[in-house]
Amino acid sequence: MLIELATAIMLTWISIEGVDKSLISAGIGLVGLIWLSTAFIQVPCHEKLVKGFDAAAYEWPVNSNWIRIIARTARGSLVTWMLIRVLSK
Image (cartoon, rainbow, N blue to C red):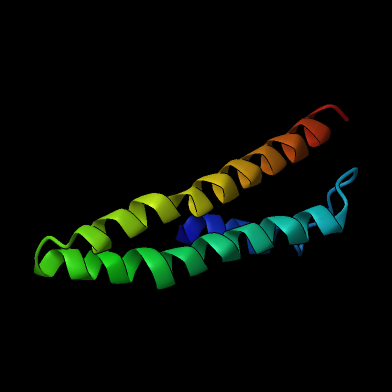
């Protein structure tokens, strides 16, 4: 996650021909969403589960993980599209 964050931020300093800055900003926003979901949903639930099984603490991270799955898929698609644009020049 740290490498993903670092590379997302580094893209703001690199001018990439054919890639709009708004797409780079969207990518950073998606990384931010992943971090927020991890910090405020996943980690607290996992901390509860370390203390002992709790059905609610188990179900919530499983169900809410879709936030991270969708955000990571969107970010991966965005980065793939940027890479294709760069390599096709």
